Length: 431
Image 1: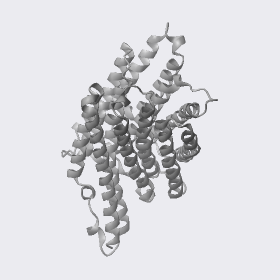
Image 2: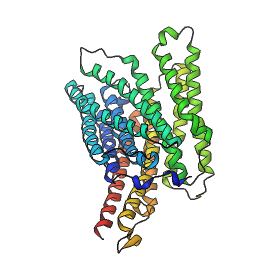
Image 3: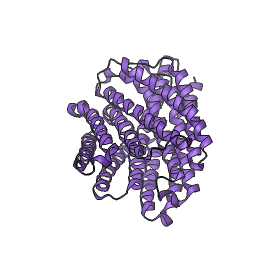
Image 4: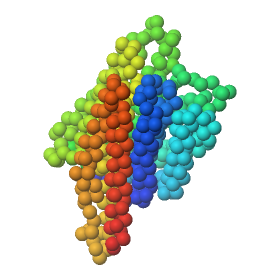
């Protein structure tokens, strides 16, 4: 790990990323409440209003919210390209985006198109401002680090995701606009693999060696992985869009693209597992357990998807459960437990190191959020995940325990993050 690649002096104010990190669990809590309100029928079809609302609460409200905050933090530190007036821009984006997600998911859940229309008025501008600001920053970045390349590809995928999502949302909101349901799967693929997965892998190139004290990823992985995933998505999108024309003669091509995509993701999982097993820091913590759980679920979701494509069984709900809560939520939860304590330590060090109190008043990262707290929430997370998978097969027995477990789990994450911020404020006030 080369710490010289980090420009910590360019880090934004602590409030810039933390406003996103603190808001994300609130939307996750809302998702758990929606589960309790909707009941077991929410697992019957991905087209149900409550299911659509739940999916977007998780993807827009939690996953993308955290990644927005992470990019505001990582771009100046890792890419050396600060977003101009980041504090002001992040405040505007956060306010518009939070309101937009709330209105949009409420409109989906209640099928009230007026709320969807109103949501698009604030949600799309928020995403456009964010994408333009981040794209310009990445364009100016001089760093050649693999994480920067991966971020560029992930942001390009988010542009595609927004375009497809905008088309679907307008079709949902206005009767005069056709609802092109056949592009839904393409939208999901670019959101889940192009945006979420490529961004997580790009961040992994930096945070896994840094926080888990492992060797660097192999150069060949860092150089080609994101590009190959992007190319596979382009090929899959083309074959899926023209599925009816290709079905007779070129179905093998679609299967080949899916097989390649699955192999690439499983290869990334294998490399990361190998690095973690060979880590220099032998003491494992909850953050690494979150990572290992998430990576295992990524492999499982890819195997389930490949199986469903070959057998033509609809496993979309099960795959979504394993991918979203098993992979994305696990990894992001693990990253939050490293990034937030690091930010608290870093900014306290800046403010207190040269005061009379000095570094003696600065808590260590392990003191910001203790290992015990992290482990308790990790165990609860695993219980909730297992109950949710069981609820897919036996909803009458396991659905409500699963929903209550997620509500408790995400509430606990929120409490831990709030306590970390309170500790930061307490340390500053004591000077």
